[in-house]
Image (cartoon, rainbow, N blue to C red; front, side):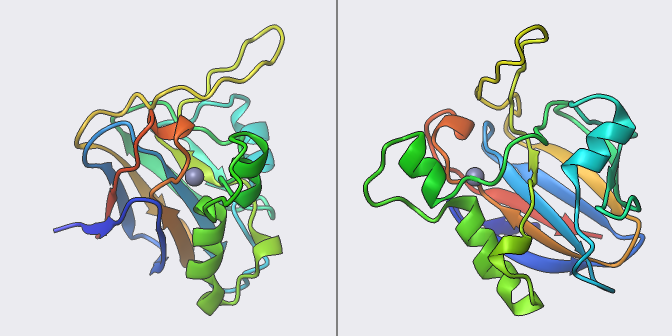
Length: 193
Ligand SMILES: [Zn+2]
């Protein structure tokens, strides 16, 4: 049985080199923000800039590698049933909801959920980078660079599988932003093997 992340919440757990992490969208159209820190030194963290630079593209899928800020491979994508994820946008946060949605009493979002889940591992909020946003669908206009956040392409039961290339601390959420999840908050399932 997979673990379940409740809607609008997040978890942290360890993933050993060689272990596989499967992230499943049980109901469809739900984003999961993923962070990775090296267990040997939490100053080494997943890097969108390095990853997109080395991949020479912004949409990553099976066969692509997620790099750290020190240019080491942290995770390989070894299976992907969706083929559309985002690695441009930061985790949704109180400020996201204040600035984009105009909320007066905003939810802490993926950022707050990740900060809380990762705090016992020594991660402080300022160490949280852009997450690999599993199942998030952000088409980019190739000429103007304009971004749009659209409903995920994931259907119920769709999955992506990562294999760890170093010992990691993983942060993972069921995303809290209405726009990213086609207007409703749903759980995320995950398992390690
Ligand atoms: Zn989110």
